[in-house]
Image (cartoon, rainbow over all chains, first blue to last red; front, side):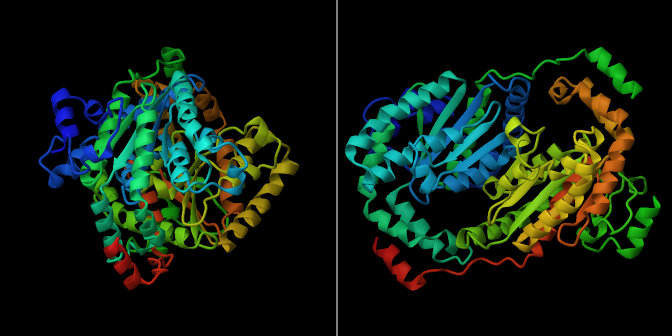
Length: 295
Length: 295
């Protein structure tokens, strides 16, 4: 057990909300101290009960999402919205989380955007331009598969812009996210923390399974050479952009079943904490009952 | 049993693919002859086994969708795509189908668009402009919650443009859809056929349940007064735009459990009939295994 996990256990027992257990503490971040194989807060015994425990979150997730959606319909200007940011190294499971955790939610309530290398049009704009365009509307749950953080991760590691440019972005991102939060967006930033060894095992698996060849990209192996640089860039992003308005959660991601359960539970807790209610009728119920009966 | 259902039974026994059973025959369409309470092709006993029978489609749907998605990644220009068009009167269950049938598919594979009354910007363009913008990209399953057909349905019934305008649209839509099909889009147009009586029951239910008030719109009762005009407009759209390239399926929609199962099964059959395969490796597998092992 790493010292960070010991500290987390001390500060918050397993009965604490998962959002407390996985919340990255403010201050210096050392990814080496965060165990990618941990399973904090997991209520089951292990892998075998994970499908059921995850599926059991479905009905409550579904109700809460529909309540959020209803608020958006009733009040399209000021209803709250949620933004889940998913970041992590290749094979950390951003896609798996979307498939298995986000997939439990009604697709009508989800605004999903997968950010790839920027297009020529996106390059002509500030890096936040495409992010703004993809923000969830009232009542929706936005999912960012990669995000503005790529502009201080791959962009930093690959020297796509100079340090004088990327070094200012942490504060820009903080301001941007604070603005979103002030306007009613609950932001949940998840770093899927996979280990160097587990990434190797997953890449090797893809080469053993013809149904997974399409997921394999030879460039992923090149990126492994830069693992320390990526970890440094992640630590900077986690440390400098860990705010009350937009907190970071580090999700241990070596166990897929834990990772999927954890993101689903984090989303459920967030929605449950928003004080959502079914909107009241905006019409005279008795009158409408008579109208329907007569129709 | 209506004469139309009798005919369907004769032409195609229940063991036939659902796509044959629900395929609207070419020629004159009379919605009065199509039973909204029917359950053609349903393999179970009734409502009770529907959740399991529908869920059982999940794994195959999921695999097929991933294969389609993989094709889109490998060949982003020419890979096939699928477009599911959902049309139906209020309460017919477009939303329910998306939640319960489409919701079984990985959200990463879905391009969902809900078409509302056109925005000022959309009004400045041809009615197909917003449709083109929402078409699924390679490897994706596009879902249209309402569609280009609104421009020959509500637009016709409410006289939003003159007959000289809407009457030309059937042929325009046929050409448009034929072009999509020629470029690799499999089009599945579903008319969710709910009865006048069942719509009334569903509207009344919404007024009995505070979690459903937000779904109730007093204008839906006004639209019931125009039911015959809507049926006539639907019959015209079904009849004039029922092509080999973009066939119409009429889904009996008085039983929600049948409707959800039927759309899921129709999508499964369509995907299964596309001859999808996992893309071959585009790299030297042995070389990559060595690279991963050494990384």
